[in-house]
Amino acid sequence: MILSDSCYTEWTGYFMVPLRDILNRPLFTSAQVAAGHQSLDRLVKWVHIGEIPNLAEFLKGGELILATGAALASPVAQRQFIQGLIDAKATALGLELGQYFPAAPADIVKVANQHQFPVIVFPDRVRFLDISYDVNTLIISQHHRVLEDLEALALKSRQALLNTEGLSSLLRALHDVIQSPVAFYRRSDPSEPIVVGSWSALNAAPTGICLNPSLESQHGLHYVRQTVMVFGQPMGDLVIQWAQTAMDERLYLACDRTAAALAQDIIRSDALERSRHNEETVMLSTLLSSTESPSAVVKRFDSRFSLGRTHQFRVLVANHDAASRAIGRCPRDLKILHLEESDRSVVVLIGRGSLLDPISTLVSESKTLNHMGFSAIHDSSVDLRAALLEAQDALTIALYALNPGNSAPTYDQLGLYRWILSTTPSDLLRLLVRPELQRLLDLPDPLQSTLLSTLESLVAHPDSKSMAAQSLGIHRQTLYGRIHQIETYLGPDFLNAPRRQVIEAAILAWRYLNRL
Image 1 (spheres, rainbow, N blue to C red):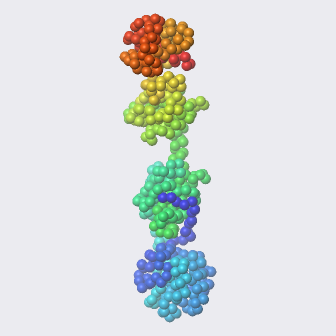
Image 2 (tube, rainbow, N blue to C red):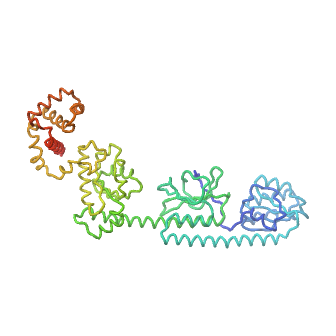
Image 3 (cartoon, helix red, strand yellow):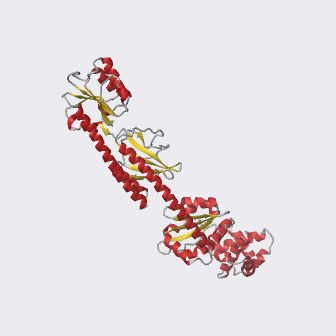
């Protein structure tokens, strides 16, 4: 459904009844439609008896005019009379045939048909007083029914607001009263409207702003729309599928009151959301900064997010741009808590484990890989501080591009780097790097770099010299020559376990230290 930008309203504020319904009344059994057959859905707000040529000057629009033709003898008077009714936006003309008109005057019928203005004729004698009383009583009874419907709508809306039942309940209350399909398009997410009832066509969101209930048409279908405003800002659009070409008073008032209730619910929801977000931010900040988290905060946090029962969490540390990218790719079922610091963002992703592992879907864009780090999966907020440190460690490895084999830089994928990151640089040099690699490190470049990269490839492919040579881009004979050189410095057993594993750890530590 694509609604036009222009809004027009056909409602005068009076309680009205469709002309078609009036023609079904017993007093209209013999009535015939002489003109304007396609406009019988027009609304009647009152019945008025009169036939002076300038009667239009005393009308306000929406009247069913009853006349005998006593003052309309000449064609000029007839044309003036019918044109005046049309210009005054009267609804229809009822003519009694007999004493003054044996049939509907041709001039009246011609002008009426040109403007699709209904002309009703009574071939039998009728009492206009009875018709006036009957129709006006119907309109007044309609007035009382509308008031009852609006009171019922007001009651249901108040209950929905007091019980915090949400926007859907308010739309259902409106649907119950008007018995027409209803939808609400959020301006923040217009692609997924809240829908109640069976729609004939529901496609794109409406555009533009309609401050009052307004009638719009598209592809032969009619809709009533009102924009829901909150503090001067459009928050959404209330849209009703409507079968008629004009609004009655019940629809107008029901739409307007529901729009007001929707605005109240949005204000309430936003206030609650801000309060909840502020509370969550305070709890999260406390848990992330405390080495010993307060038990009351831990209990409340775990209970709110079902941690330890059905949900777990990961912590993400990244720059602001990378964090925004990751948040934008998160599944909707994940709960996201986001803290922005001056130089980084801390994001806590909470959900079922199946949504947290694997996490690679969040970092499929390679340009963000070296700007984010994830913790391992945890199930209690007691571990939030530790998870933050894990995410920082993963980010450190990602920033230095030390973990190219893993698509997602998560702490549980860091392997030996978890131990390296927890050891001081001086201890890494003293206990690991120098005992295993010092003789190679003492060599001048480029020999040092050549033999270190060859050693790194050999320990990565201990069972395949071909793969080691391929990874280095050299011939196997060249590789064997380098192996012989390495043996002169490290000994012939450098590829035998467990020494090979120690050398691999030493190379990782050396690469890490060189990037600090």
